[in-house]
Image (cartoon, rainbow, N blue to C red; front, side):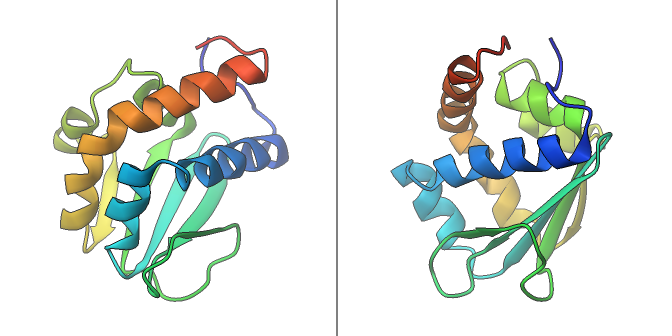
Length: 133
């Protein structure tokens, strides 16, 4: 199974709900909140955009752009799904140009070490929804 939704509205709700869950993982929360910027994540096919605002040292996930992006990442929904199911390596995806970075992404790239924790949450989330990785 690939990314579970083709409809942009369903995909947006699915992704935002998943990213909100990452706030509860201490390692991820600490890493992202230390970036002190707005990070835009732009997913294609279907179109899903969200922003993680860490300017105040917190981690706030938003469906509307809260300010100027300090960094952004663009990738396909299929790659997003493959990364979080552990079928694709984030570092290699950056190196191969599958993830298109913009702005100050060095800190974000360092967060690839949290991918195993995020992948665990994603697989649990899929399972709760009755979806298979």
